[in-house]
Image (tube, rainbow, N blue to C red; front, side, top):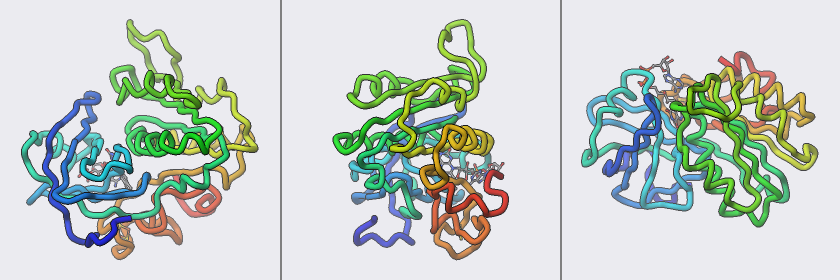
Length: 274
Ligand SMILES: Cc1cc2nc3c(=O)[nH]c(=O)nc-3n(C[C@H](O)[C@H](O)[C@H](O)COP(=O)(O)OP(=O)(O)OC[C@H]3O[C@@H](n4cnc5c(N)ncnc54)[C@H](O)[C@@H]3O)c2cc1C
Ligand code: FES
């Protein structure tokens, strides 16, 4: 967690680099004025002075405290302004907030990860954390889908993962182009070809709501139990602190009780896929 820091007060962070990941997605490299710690899967509120703030899950390694990467998809008012920022400006970071991935509970197991679109941002942070503890894991399999080859983010990540012992990474696209010679189909179709020992495995799902829903159903079909499936939930948020009620999902505050839940914890709550 955050040690001595006041999690209510934004920490100033200098934007040092903006990486264009896809036509709609950019990664912001930030150097905080003091070290910033988070657990993988926790989120921050990132602000632009005088404009507003929005919740994001850092995409960088939780083991690095003097540099933070946040991957942002342009979807509306605040994210559009963020996309126009240039290196040198200061941003604000509140947090970290919520409950991330319980990495120790994955020890001794295979970890099957299903991601789609910008959902690879939190997953990349998780992959860094898993790489650090890989001696305690059986294997890690990433299945990722993007709409088109151009929409795929962190392209070099896939070759890198495939070069690490115990790691496997697969990509698909909904629609190919003239250069694409890989699989075509939505992200969960990749699960048809993976080899996992379901009883000694956990599954992690992160992506757009429709992929979360059908990906989870597919993983259940493969024989996973509800409590073996970890979902990173995104609900509209405001305070991030369990106070305003914006993020309520049935009886849970997604900002405080999540954003990472097991399917078992939330499956009976209303509108979980909205
Ligand atoms: C815990 C958490 C982690 C997230 N991590 C990331 C991340 O790593 N990268 C990333 O690009 N996005 C992430 N998001 C989504 C991001 O917060 C929204 O895209 C952002 O708040 C939109 O702000 P805006 O002002 O640009 O859009 P607005 O102008 O407010 O809205 C534009 C559109 O975005 C939708 N939207 C607004 N807020 C959210 C929200 N909180 N979640 C989902 N949709 C929203 C609106 O319904 C609307 O359709 C995360 C959201 C949560 C709750
Ligand atoms: S965002 Fe305010 S209670 Fe969760």
